[in-house]
Length: 170
Image 1: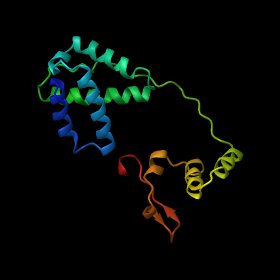
Image 2: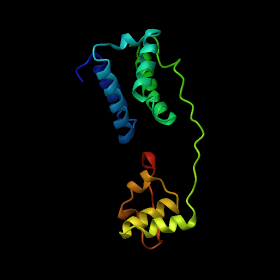
Image 3: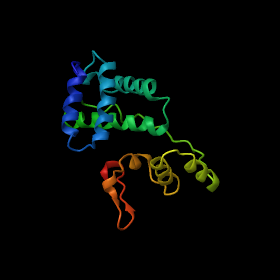
Image 4: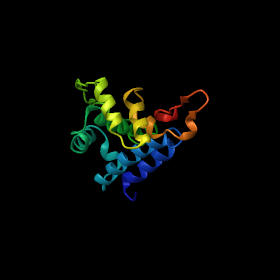
């Protein structure tokens, strides 16, 4: 990134590479690249409070304000860590993210499928692997991300057990 902010983003990402999972690293990289390109001509010092607060708040709202509270807050967290990193290194004197409030999650109404619906969904799958995947999701409640990481080697045929790996490889 050949922008003034791009150099700050790269130094931050270089330092965070050892601490973030590959998926988190890609998220941070994407969010901060969008930020650096949007504010092409600005420097880190241009985000000093109070002007930086307003700039960042408007950017977050324009770019991610229509997302769910969880999505918006994830992106805000990226910026909080980015500005905290630079503030601790005295590259910026004030953190513009401190006064920005997190979005409040609204109550989400969720319903489960009835037993008949679950059986119908599983039965409608033409491939055995798809029926197995639906059964793991609907009857055992594993998460989509865990299912995406399942490999044949994770199945213990003797004990008839499947090891699933969640977010962060746990």
